[in-house]
Amino acid sequence: MPRLPKCRRVAFLPEATYLKPAGIPLRLLDEVRLSIEEAEAIRLKDLEGLEQEPSARRMNISRSTFQRVLASARRKIADALLNSKAIRIEGGNFELAPPGITGE
Image 1 (cartoon, one colour):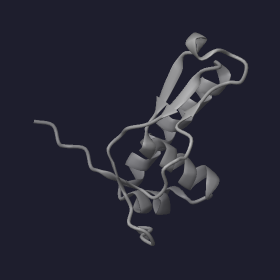
Image 2: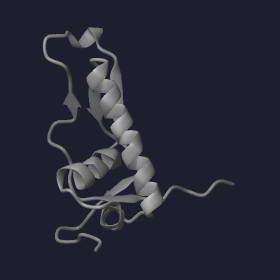
Image 3: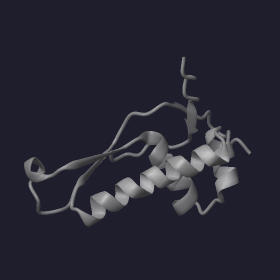
């Protein structure tokens, strides 16, 4: 029996959950789904500039898991940007971090 995935901690929920290229009707667009924890990994590493180890601690996951989540997020974002796809941010296996808790 496979092990249940560990719940990842996120400290931020994005206001916009759907992003699309301007000037292209929605019905003509393919879509990429970015999970909430993938968005959190991008926020911690690329926006806040944290290294992988402190980012992983904040998300309550191992560094190698953080690295896989980050790589998946970057691949999806690159696909959407370069191939004019919409990005839907939703779902995943996460819990919202209590205010003031960073995991460090």
